[in-house]
Image (cartoon, rainbow, N blue to C red; front, side):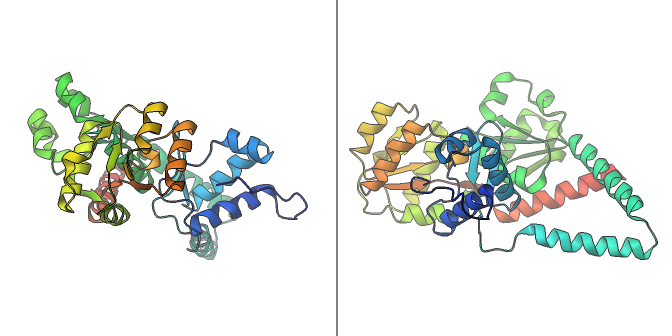
Length: 332
């Protein structure tokens, strides 16, 4: 994606701004898609002969514009709803802040007093959110990673994820979930979770999940594509994919899964199938060697479909309303 790109050191535009321009262009031209992973800061800095801090600055600016998401320990990914043509939210925020400051000045507050008031309110909200942890429970790690990204971006609260199998085996579900003010799980697992820990019923929020529109379009395009395979981390995620393949008329028993990716085995697989389904990049980080193999597969005409299993928009709005109400109650 950055193969022929180089920083023009003769331009007046700073290097990090040139890199931002390039990434925006790649997203706009759909050469970078939602969930795609960008190179690590150190690797891209070496490739472009830049300081690592320059790449870091570009990534962070794009994350503030919601074109990228940065997940600690996993990497930097194209955001689900990345749209470089949309007006950056920073401009909207500045307008709102200017109106607020104007109103406070009209009440004869000085700049120093306004700064103190804003700092105090932000500190109060930060402390409140830190003491308001929420939990997400599901049956597979791929979906949990997707939920984690969605919920982290939506609520900015402290989120911890649990695999349902781990809770079943541990036998102390109630104790593990006791610290959480809100527990989110899918409608499929809500009843079992209450059976495991009846005391959480009032704090449990079941949500609806489904493949994203882009995923459904990608799956529909596989009809008549030839042999299909899945690469993922868990057999449960494979089962979910097969359920949706059956709904569009593709026989799921003919779609094998590779759960333990070995580069040699993957290379052989790409020579025998015409399409591969896999989780989005932020839920399924790939090594550089695996990425290279998959890039070669697509160059030869193979199809890659990212299976994005998301909390539906209506449920996200419900979560937002619920957390806002609970935070307001806690602050009272």
